[in-house]
Amino acid sequence: MRLGIFIAFGLLAAMSAWADEKLPLLKTGSDVYSNVTVLSFTATDVFFTYNNGRNDKGMANVKLRDLGPELQKHFHYNEAKANVAEQKQTAANAKYYSSITDQPAVRPPDESREQPVAAQDSRLSWGTDLPVALNQARSDNKMVLLDFTGSDWCPWCIKFDHDVLSTYEFASYAKNKLELVQLDFPRTKPQSADLKQANAELAKRFNVNGYPTYVLLNPSGDELGRQVGCAEGGPAAFIAKLDGFAKR
Image (cartoon, rainbow, N blue to C red; front, side):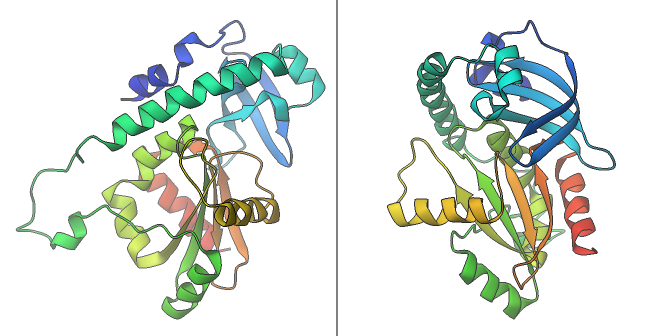
């Protein structure tokens, strides 16, 4: 499945001269990645793994346009070529996203006799209104998880959604602990001007510079912790990270 995702997003066509190159630091905006290993890069993005220590490691990608001049030169960034490539990339990613969302859900073996039906349902309700979610969180004594995503174009967003957020393990945890808010920055999906502006303001407020970014809040709206990028370890690792944030 992972190889299929990489093929679908055209990563096999990415330039590979810098593959496995090691960088001690990679900075974009306020986000700093340490112990970086470059996987590949395109005219628009660089894809890499990182290890910031402890449980903060995984995979991510950043836009070349958001890097400093030296790294832009290093990866041969050309704004005109990037714009053309981004348009093609958006169309291809949207087509792939549509193909996976149209597929019937894959469910585990039927164990309905041993567990309630609700426990088998991985569908979650993601809101788009943070004040509403915070009010509900205060009422139900839950936390709020913000998902800053590019749902129809960002490969790591789609991968993490498939591998973690759409799993039964995460659904079970979220239904008891979280109010969920998706802050989407799509390229092809229709989105109202009001929602687009509200999401942009929240991205600025929480200093989000890349996707995906997951921010955990207490019911008062204070940040408890965040994950930037597609971390490894599946739902169990993500749940453990959220629990760790909650204990701070």
